[in-house]
Image (cartoon, rainbow, N blue to C red):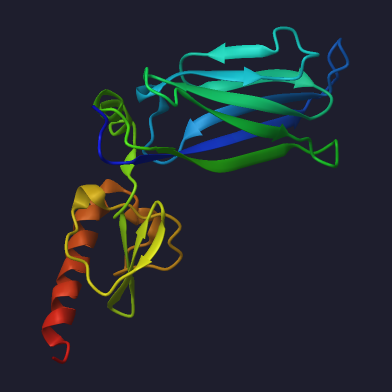
Length: 221
């Protein structure tokens, strides 16, 4: 039976390119690495069976399979190209995989290195219970009700992985649901990057809950 709750996972796709001190015997001038990683608190090995990198056909064995972390592939070359990345999940239910294109570009100045990281979201629509038990320990989050945003002591929005929902009332907040992403201003004296760390979640939640109660007690009838 499928679960009733959608689950979302944040991942990172990227590559690095470094100029070699001397070209290889094949004439390769740069070393490069492409990778798939989990975002903060995401462990891909919990729900990813393997990652398939399909690189340029000029390379031997252009389809490379990586079954254990780190999910990355390193080679040498002299020019960039478009490659394909497929994540195959530990489930028998569809969709069994997610596919992405990645532009492995070199720096316009060939003497310089190149680095790129691209965030992506995997959204699983009502995954089966067995797969859900792999997603959640791996860093998957329910697709709504994740973050409370406070401005000038007023709760103005609940930010979910689906978007931003304006609200004037927050009725239920649990520490296990609280995640903050891309916050640019401190909240209750806690810096944005600190809120992502678990030791700050309880204190932050308590502050938000207390302020919410105070606002409703003092608001004119």
